[in-house]
Amino acid sequence: MKRIVYFAIVLLGIGFVQTGKAQVNVSINVGSQPLWGPVGHSYARYYYIPEIDVYYDVVHRRYTYYQGNRWVTKSKLPGRYKKFNLYRTYKVVLNDRNPWQHHRTHRTSYSRYANNYSQVVLRDARRDREYRRDDYKRDDRRHDAKRKYNKKENKRKHNNGRGNRR
Image (cartoon, rainbow, N blue to C red):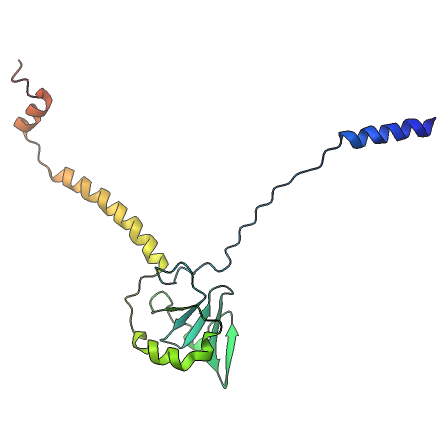
């Protein structure tokens, strides 16, 4: 008899138990462009930096450069580029599989950009949009502040064309 009661309790317990539902949201920006990347590209696999002959892998966030007699891939630039400013230099977007295999072609095609510092980067483009909005607001305030108070004009606005009331 005890077995039947225990069995019934277990069955009832199982009937009332609900499965747990969990929502897990993992957001990893794999392949997102760094803030020093150029503006205007929705997708970029590699950047070629002609000033220092280095390739940057956007997805894996690693640099590939020629050292000794072979191409080396590392997460940081070598010490000789310690003071190199990635925000300032020109970057060429390449979507080849292993772009360093065509390095001669890239070097001849893009060497003219080696000392070109006119490229807008993502960081500056975001700032520029914010500055434009702020400047627009500031210009309106300046314009309002420069407008002189004119007694006659003000009187006309408030009377709405009803004439002089006293």
